[in-house]
Image 1 (cartoon, helix red, strand yellow):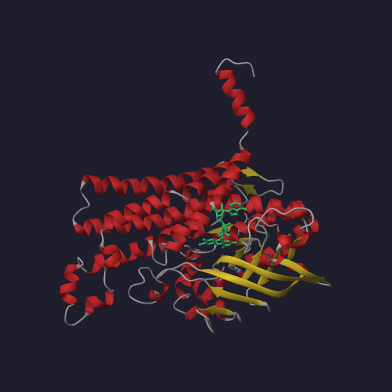
Image 2: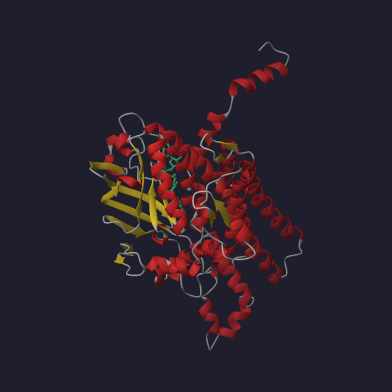
Length: 465
Ligand SMILES: Cc1cc2nc3c(=O)[nH]c(=O)nc-3n(C[C@H](O)[C@H](O)[C@H](O)COP(=O)(O)OP(=O)(O)OC[C@H]3O[C@@H](n4cnc5c(N)ncnc54)[C@H](O)[C@@H]3O)c2cc1C
């Protein structure tokens, strides 16, 4: 298993075509807008070697015959799903943001199921590739979301809005298109592309699941902007850890056949989509409560410092933050505990509870953030730079006016998480990551046995069924 230092070294060996603010970045590992997100991923490697957390952060793999980082592991038992949530909570708390490795882990597990359903050839190719991922301890970018253009149109009506196969040659396929919002793409070793929506017969060119190195010829990455990202690396960043989203452009990228897992199999792609959505929607029950541990801690410390902490309404609001965060966590754990075994041998989350978990995440974090803004006071949005606290003429007076240096730093952290760079992970990702709210409601409606519920109600009401 890679150490954090080995992970950093491995990123430097890539010939990444990454652009930030219009300029190509020669070494992503030292760019101030990329470095905070690399630090977050590095935590996932560090924990596997940390005596306190190694048992949780690693797992035995039958594929390699030894321990692997949990982020490359298959869910071989219900406990694996529970441990995933517990690990995510620890990492969410340690980073205060998105640590970017869950999409890849959930994609591996969904592909294991979908390729098994597709048949022995597909499954064999996938398992051989996945064994290498475990051996090298790769960080994966899970690339599902297409640009989609006009949402009313099917992929064949606007093919340029979807990643697609434009050529099938001897020995592989050629891909063209883009994937949007790619978490951690520039911090990864490989990209795993998967279709972003349910496909129909006649849409086989879009039914592609495959893996390629992040620096494969034809791949261009463009880093997404985040609020206040110009502060990164400076005293006002608020958090030295960060998240990352990238637009990935595919300009005729050749993928050799041994890394093409599904090609044209619309039914297997539907399985892939559903399995991934379940796993990933439950994942939010781990990482986000961990993030909120950090936010609650910062807000409690600010109120302590300001002398408001013991007021009854403040205590009540802090408890409300805890209640909301634990509600998210509880449903994530429940979805994992109520898992079922798939025919291929691995375990899947309860789809209804996983979707309830993510649906809560589209709402409750906004209330948590509202309370954080309430208790922090107006200085959260009006505070001068930390650098001004050192000004030779007014620094001392300013430090007194803002309530002291500690309070200033804590407020910067809360600012980062509520509407600074970290708000992408704590607001937008909560809303849209793993699918917008309507996507969860569709699953909830489909998985509910309405006839059975109505028949039950009729029995209770003394009516004929
Ligand atoms: C921070 C962040 C990180 C992310 N990380 C990843 C990642 O690592 N990998 C990845 O693949 N994706 C990632 N995503 C993408 C995420 O899965 C999508 O944002 C999500 O699926 C919604 O898609 P969209 O952004 O295109 O919004 P849209 O699909 O445009 O949704 C906007 C609104 O339109 C509605 N809508 C959409 N289509 C229709 C329709 N046909 N009819 C009626 N209403 C419609 C939706 O319900 C929603 O209310 C990430 C997103 C964010 C914000």
